[in-house]
Image (cartoon, rainbow, N blue to C red):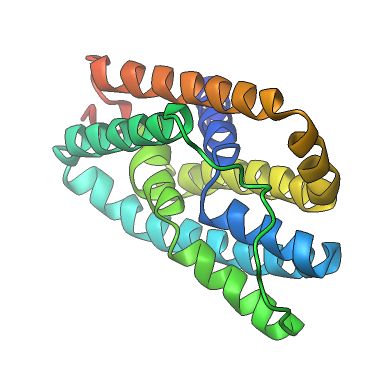
Amino acid sequence: MVEGSALAGVFVIALGMVLTPGPNMIYLVSRSLTQGRRAGIVSLGGVAVGFLVYLLATNLGLSVLFTAVPQLYLAVKLAGAAYLGWLAWCALRPGGVSVFTPRDVPPDPPRRLFAMGLMTSLLNPKIAIMYLSLIPQFVDVEEGHVLAQGLVLGSVQVAVSLGVNAAIVAAAGGVAVFLARHPAWLRTQRYAMGAVLGGLAVTMAVDTTAPRAAAR
C-alpha cells in the first residue's frame, strides 16, 4: 500500500528534522541535564502524545481535503521547502549555540514534566509543518486508502523522532561533556545537517513532476 521510496523519503526528512535542534530537543536535553534521565523520559512521553495528536488530526482531515482540493499541493510543497530551507539556514548560520549547553531549568513533578512535553510538542512548528506539508507529499491517492497511508507514513516519523530523542535523553550528559571538550564536532554536526536539509529544500522546490497525491 505504501511504497518503499515513500517510507524512505519520510525517514530521511524526519531524521534530518529531528537532528536539527528545535523546541522539543532543547526542552528534553534541558530536563535531562538538570533533573536526570527519568525526567527526560517522562517529558518525552508528553512529546510522544503530541506527535499522536498531530498524526490523527491531520490525517483525518487530509484524507478528505487532499482528494477534494488537489490545487493545494503546490502551496504545500513550497511551504515545506521554505521551512526546510529555514532550518538549513539556522544550522549553518554563524554564532549558533549548542542545544547541549546547560540551562537553568527548575525541577518539576512528573505530571508537569509530561504536560510541558506535550505542550512543547503541540506548539512546535517543525511538527506542524512535518504533518501538514511534508508527509502528505508522499501519499498516493491513486493507490487508495489515503488515511491508512498517512497513518503509516506518520508512524515512521513518530518512530524516528522518539528513537532519536530517547537516545539523546539517555546520552545528554555525556554528549554535553564531549561537545564542551570538542567544539569542532558540534560544527561538523551543524554543517552536515544544514547541508542535508538545504539539499532537500532545493530538491522539493524545483521538482516539477505531477504530485502523486493530486494526479486525478
